[in-house]
Length: 160
Image 1 (cartoon, rainbow, N blue to C red):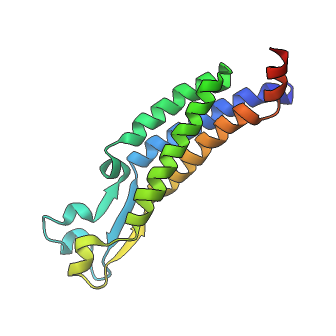
Image 2 (tube, rainbow, N blue to C red; image 1 turned 135 degrees about the vertical axis):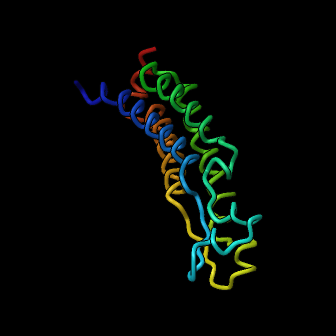
Image 3 (cartoon, rainbow, N blue to C red; image 1 turned 90 degrees about the vertical axis):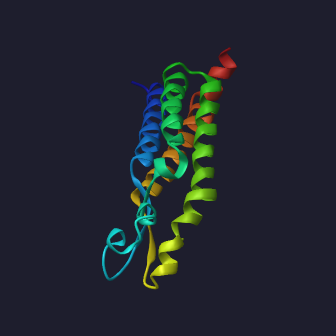
C-alpha cells in the first residue's frame, strides 16, 4: 500500500471518528453545576433540578446526532468515493459543530444560572461532552481538508 492509497482510508477513518464524537456529545454531559456542601440535585428546588446537569442533546435538541450521521455519509463519499462535494460537506459539518461549541456551549459552560443565585458556592463545570464536540468538529474539518488538499489530491485533478 502506497501513502497515496492510505489517504482515502485516513479521510474515511477521520470522518467516521468525527461522526462518533458528534453523536457521543449529545449523550454526554456538556456542563453541570456543582455545589460544595451537597449535590446540586439535593439542594435545588424541584423546578431547578434539571439545570444541575445538561447533556449535549438537552443543549441542542440532538442536532449533533444528525450532524454525526451526516458525517458518516460524507466520510464514505469523500474517503472511499473520492467525492469533492462530500469533502466540502465534512468541512461544513465540522464548522457547524465548532460554531455551536464556540457560540453556545462554551459561554454557557461557565454559567451557574438560577442555582448560582440560590447558592453562593455553586460553580459551573465543563463536561466531557464539550471535549467530544470540539474534537468531532476538528476531525470533520481535518478529514475534509485532507481529502481536498492532501497528498495526491492535486495529481488526481491533473490526470482528469
